[in-house]
Image (tube, rainbow, N blue to C red; front, side, top):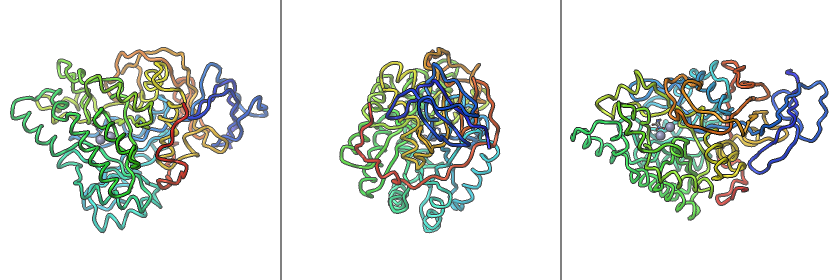
Length: 474
Ligand SMILES: NC(=O)NCCC(=O)O
Ligand SMILES: [Zn+2]
Ligand SMILES: [Zn+2]
């Protein structure tokens, strides 16, 4: 068994508390938390000047994913290594399925992509593109045996991933009975398809037309529709990558009526805006993802929604493509630019710097948004998502005073640009531990490909104390 570790002199921060105490780690888990714990034969780790956070959990990644005529640049090795440098100790990646093919084959493909590669712990959501007797008969095993308690339905990407309303509705009904959380990419794919064809017909081919053909109304409409269907099915819904006021409004409205609905935003929507798509020399292509970046005023709406609890989580939507060679597939036709951006590494630091340091959210809300709430919603709490005796020792030693500049020159993702290039931020994950073993120590990678473990998750709703109107400690 690994030598015991004792973290001393740090300030522990959870979703509810902030206090000075030592943490004793034995094997993979936390065995004691207290003042002046005896060293014994433990290795002592000095966390002076650092916060000790529970490892962050990224609920939304696409690693090694075929999309837009190419494959994402970051795979489970480079992507999880970059995640670890950013303070993330677990991810949930989207497993794509193909119509007419067994769900278990898709899951096996995702196990093959991640096993022997991931340096942090990982789990999968499962895409549902069709509902029929075969799919329905496979779902109980997906949830119970594979521990995949979240199902993803795309309302956009016509003729690629898009599912119709019947599929969404039947998925919601099945999920209610089986104990799964339904996730939606909420944009009206049919309207986008029409607007896109019109744009091309009129010779509008630049990257900015990606945003102009996917206006906020198409996101608001789809979010509202998904919320209504959830209400009708008496089921549960998680809306991924919320980017605009129109969608926040629909989520808040449904929550106020008691619908079991949750919303995730992403760092790109909090820190970047539509003007990035207008950059010259095709550079706007770096910022093409869906939903698109919005006018700047939407950012404050998203921050307020995180603060008030109308949005609850932050996903990276990591889906990286090189600018050279991959994004360039769309030169002269914005519809051929692979959709997605590199976000896995900077997600946590951006929320800390732009959120906590600028007084938009509290430090406890920060922990809740990047870790605890995700663990609760996706069936991993209290093993993951908090610092408590018996929990996995997934820990981040975070220096809140370190000032730095985000850049492709220093990031660890495999992709050739950083979407936040030149952005000054405050705060840095110094050392990161997964189940008691360092993956990053003093900003050096000390982990191993394949050391990450697959997480079988509990059914949705296992955490009985998760109440619709639960307010967060401020
Ligand atoms: N977001 C994006 O543009 N790419 C990844 C796939 C998705 O989440 O829609
Ligand atoms: Zn999406
Ligand atoms: Zn995504």
